Amino acid sequence: MPPTTTDADTAREYLRVSRDKSGRERSPEEQHRDHQGIAAERGWTLGDPYKDIGSASRYAAKAREDFDRLVDDLTADRFDAQVLFLWEGSRGSRRTNEWVRLIELCEDRSVKIFIYTYERLFDPANPYDRADLLELAIKSELASAETSKRTRRAAAATAAAGRPSGRCPYGYQRRYDPVTRKLVAQDEEPIEAAVVRELFDRLHAGHSLRSIEKDFEARGVRSRSGKVFSSQHLRSLAMNPTYSGQRVHDPGRTSGHTLSPKATFTQATWPALVTRTVFLAVRRRLTAPERVTTRPGRAVHLLSMIGVCDVCEGPIAARSGSRGQEYVCHRKGCVRVGYDELNTFAEAAILDYLTRPENQAWWTAHDDDDAALFAAREQVAEIRAELDDLADQVGAGLVSATLAARAEPAIVARLAAAQEREAELTTPAPLRDFLTPGADVVQQWKVAPMPARREAVRLLFSPALCGQLRVRRSPTPGHRSPVEDRVWWKATH
Ligand SMILES: [Zn+2]
Image 1 (cartoon, helix red, strand yellow):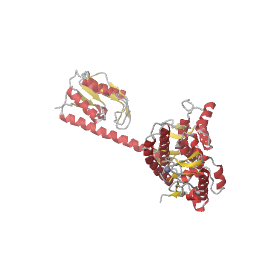
Image 2: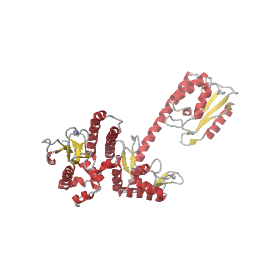
Image 3: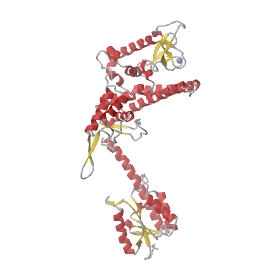
Image 4: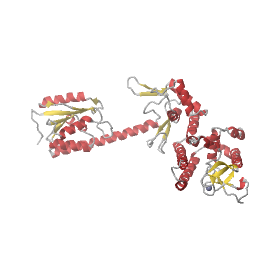
């Protein structure tokens, strides 16, 4: 038996922006006009409508307040009408469970559902009508999931084509087609682009973020929102591959600039503001381990926290004592060795390595900055910071030395693994930042700043290259033995 209503019935509409079969948007006003025609035909009175603007998709985050009001009214018996008017089947809700609830509420209150696009009145109390309504809900949930999947695929495709997406980055402006409103291009914004270029040039020349921050502030250089650039903000600009004309797509990214292994890079369609070489050099500088440390004195010694005690596998560190300056096992003091002696020995080894003809090709090899390398470098920096943190906590009395000694080996082991991975992936970029192959390597090394030299040492004294620099105990206790007899190189194989 077909559901019936009487002439005296009141119908209330639930309206939300929708698309018709041709993809054209049907506004709530248009839907209302459609409904008026039906109501006149059937002799219904239209009551106060419920009206939402957002999408009903479960993948949409927007609140749909009037839908909730409709459900509340039905629940509390405030609906005061015999018909619920929907423009199309999926309008009720695209979440099947919400839709089922709505159908049940309508059934309990003897409210029938009219769906305009089907030109049909459904009675939820009728099992056949009910089955049809449920089928509509399942179909529309499926359609919604497919749309969401298509959107994600479209984002990946946009990235693969190097097209811009998201907010327009500082330094650029976007041009849109005046008719279709479609994005035509992302061009330089001349004033902002000049700021970006200056930032990179100065970081590349060795200026600190702090000094650039102060200078920008004094000169009235401001962000797009009119704020003073903080060093943190400047750092994030300098780390953004956008400026080297690279499009990054990283569906696995969880936070900040740490790229996930899923990250992909493509050549962007917008112009680069800095060369890849400058971008990479600046990025290396900003992620260099020397940057992570907060204690300024740490970077003055060539081999501190790089050389390893052969007895306990802990790092060695420079220390001044009664016997003058020495490198000492940092953890337990198992070994001590002359400071100048060990520096001279290590530098000779490095210069020997760099001047060997078979290493020239490796050293000048082409740069490779894929996401895996970035990820590895950041992991090394993080573990190193963790280790420094532990040392600081012991120093501040927050953690006992015993507890720290127990925790340290595991961290050191993780650090070694991460470094090995980094060395595997890295080309000798840290060296090229301050050494020009073919020129007088010895002279260039002598004038290089300590952080740069340390970065080179860290790279070269990794197990995958020269090997770890390990200091043994003196073979004749109480006597000084030459440093050559005390040091060996531990390589991976
Ligand atoms: Zn030791």
